[in-house]
Length: 378
Ligand SMILES: *Cc1c(COP(=O)(O)O)cnc(C)c1O
Image (cartoon, rainbow, N blue to C red):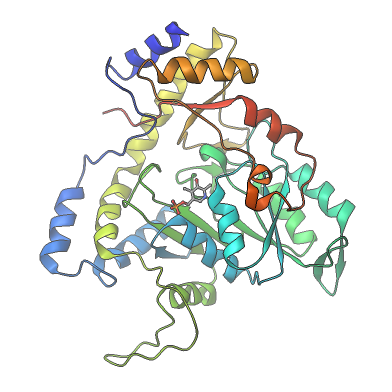
């Protein structure tokens, strides 16, 4: 294990503490922030929000983008746009960050957990299909869960650590079963499946710009869609449902204050300019790790077939839970920050009563996957 620590220290050219993922502000960040402050438009109105939305949509190849205060808010609104209502069910993967399930729960809907694929770490089309075939039927163009009599409104797959899941297959299954596809693309800005950007396969997709993501606005998120009506609805729902008027305050429904402040958007516009550079650096880091781990009995997780990963967080698979624990202990006490993958969602107190498919792969990965330092190198 000492040789791994040595390699990582050499890779990051330091013997000091190496964090898992640090943001980098090496472009126009300060310039745009100063400009934003000078303009006094630091809050919920301003040019940087509009600029960001236009440039982001262009970057991922969607028609519209609506900026939000964080990625969880973007997911929450995305699910509402897919018509998820209180009492509905939403299928997602057991191996994900808790935000996916929180967003489902805010609506009063319930998550159902299916398995992930070993190669992608993302939602398994096979597990999804099996769950639907064994438990559901289509009645009046709705997917009805025969056990709970509830409607399965949406499926929210997640592209884990930036590695695209088998999204085309998932989309086909969703279409056949009248289930809306809502992508949690929070981790996958810069990742493509068959040359199409993640987050753009379903009706709506959500991204995050939290401090640890590939680019950051401090906190922030965005909803993408090709549907003009949905984009307008997203804007309306995230801005307290205020009817546009030069001075009057009239609102036509209960909505949310989920708008991204202009100050955060200023930072984000500068960060987006750096994205290609960041992607290149992460890819280079991944190739270095890949080569190093090839000579060990530890498996480095590579981008899946037919896809291009942003390699947001680099990850390895240890042999078993014991080796994983030893690895975490050794690296973290030797100045190299590493972290195990999430606990499965169905093991958390608040989701333990939710329906689950067989979660063989999820359990295997939960015990073995560890993230290793992944920052962009300067
Ligand atoms: C980061 C993240 C989110 C959203 O997080 P915020 O902190 O609310 O921006 C959602 N889903 C996944 C999988 C994430 O990694």
